[in-house]
Amino acid sequence: METAALLSPADVNVIRRYVQTKYAPLPNGKRAEMVADAIRRTLEQRLPDLPAEIKSRMSTDLIRRCLLSERREVKPDDVLDFCAELELPEEESEKLLVEPMLRWMNERTPGLWSADHVASRIVRSKVIPIPTPMMLQEESVADVDGPEAAEAEQAAALSEPAGIADPLQSPLKRPGFAEKLTRLPRKAWAAVAAIAAAGAITGVIVLSSFNQPSTEAPQPSPIAVPIADIGMPSHLQYRDINEEAVKAYMRSRDGLMAEEPYFSAVVASAKKHDVNPLLLFAIVGQEQGFVPRSNKNAEKIANNPFNVFHSWQEYNTDIRDSSDIAARTISRRGNARPEGHEPFDWFNKKYAEDPNWGAGVKRLFDKLSSLSPAP
Image (tube, rainbow, N blue to C red; front, side, top):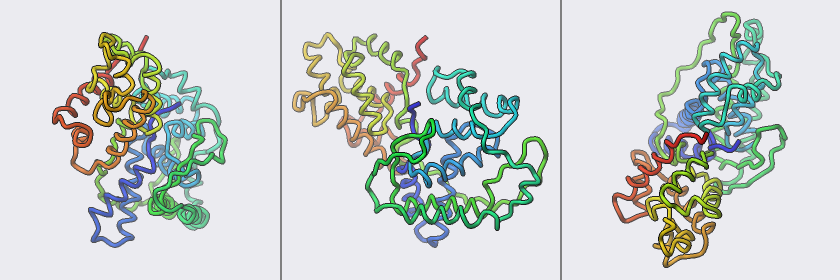
């Protein structure tokens, strides 16, 4: 399943830069706590609407497993894998997991998931028991301080210098885990390591029983850190799209971009640079009306429907090259978006001289996003 990442190295760096800039006068330790808290809350906001205990444990597990142990982004498949490992009675699994997971998956990839499909994914293996109240009483801070804190420190120590993306192969060959891993810069790893260490010290990893009441352990007061509205918004990052519905819409506009090799080239470039394909198609729609076949220069325009390097007349190679340039430009621009800037207006300042360009792209993006799933 190929969908947008829930938490990426870019997200971690955006949060870190935001906190370090806005709260520069604070001590380093306080800023590290704020970064850790913001990263955790950012991930939890993107998770399914599950019970609080499950969501809390899920976020801790995904941060440790994906970002620390495997050094990669958190994917929707990881959420499914986590649910598959929870030990719940079948009837509780249906109520607590399947229904909210089905809603969440269909929000991300409309029309592709059924209740049976979700159930088949999350009722696979049961290897992580949910602690009972007695187990929770026996697990003290002293029981969890060493190995997990050491793991966090080791992850930070093993990080590479900033700025180099190093695809690695996952050491765990389990279903649903991405094969390409990304190293985080040292400071970003330090922030994520702080989360794991904090989780070990405060005991937030334990999950209370769903069958018996338990006394909640006192939790530290959360640090009031606003989630920064900066960088590339999640809905503009790569995700699967309803290709047939998008093609049908473009064909209704006599668009050559609905055909091959043009359509697949745009989707491939979007995936490569973590950009929502609908954003690239919306740009094509704004620039060239999806390249009407009736235009006598349609095939030449389709080589560069984004008008990269000024226009298709000045730069005319092929669709793979031009879509790669456009996707890379949009990705870099989006990741550099500062707080308080509307995304499409921010793209407009870099991509086009027409001040109404961004509004036009947004209208087309919203239209493409609203298309119903193909029957």
